[in-house]
Image (cartoon, rainbow over all chains, first blue to last red; front, side, top):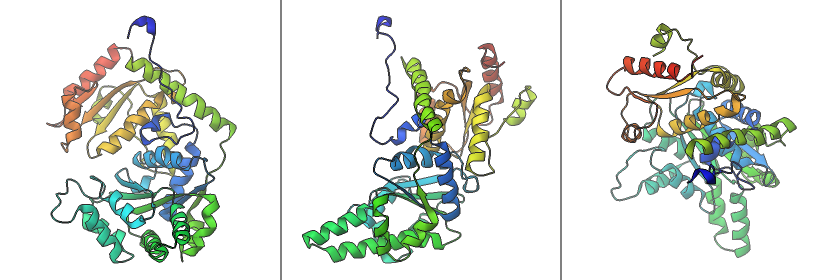
Length: 254
Length: 121
């Protein structure tokens, strides 16, 4: 690039879409919210991030909570985290298995012989309600390593159930699968020594649907984080912070 | 490394490992806002941890109220991983390779370079 053309400009604002994980350096102004989420997750090991559509739930988790955990903001848990994130869709247990089977989450460099790693994990998850704990124990994670399971757009569980009922197709199977999936998540918080932490994001208009599953409403009551509106100072930080960092980056890389 | 830095006349601040999230964050941000040199000790942490810390260091400009960024060095320690090998192969700026043992001379040299460049007041 010639000097006359000047430095390339990087737009540090993502616009209406959620922040991606690789944009955490541009995520400013919500530190107090992230800290409150970390503290609640530390207390309950089950956090439901609830808010209206577009309130920034996914951004808060992707660019706030996940980096905060790796930075050691949950001091007693340390900085060693493995993280699996997925959307439940119409096959929540399969989706969780595929997320856990990603290289480096539970296992590293697994060589498939016969069944794939995702299939092995899915089989274990379907065996009992302690399937998630079992597969974590089988993985033999090092001492001090935690597992974070993020279920993004948890409301898909309810939407697919509704659709299946409308289509009159496999509604019963989808319902059973959803119940088994919820039990896998809830069982984790019953084990005091377990190093698995569960986070789900959900639109607030689906909160009432959670009563369909025994124990889920109680867990959400204990671990709910309702995404608040940003204050004036937080909005200022969200605008000024990325400009300072973005300007610095474009200068550095030109 | 802490001992060496102290011997060279520097005050060493470590990240906080106690307190609730806001206390830990506040301590770490204060350190990043006021420091002259950052040594990132890359040992047991994995690649994802390193990426997160790198991103946090990029945010420093937002904490320092116009103060210039500090000199930054990454000290590689065991275990040897493909990510660390890649940093060495790519000749990443500010890298101190301690995979073969403690690199006292390289650390001292880095501090001298930072001082000469005016990063240390």
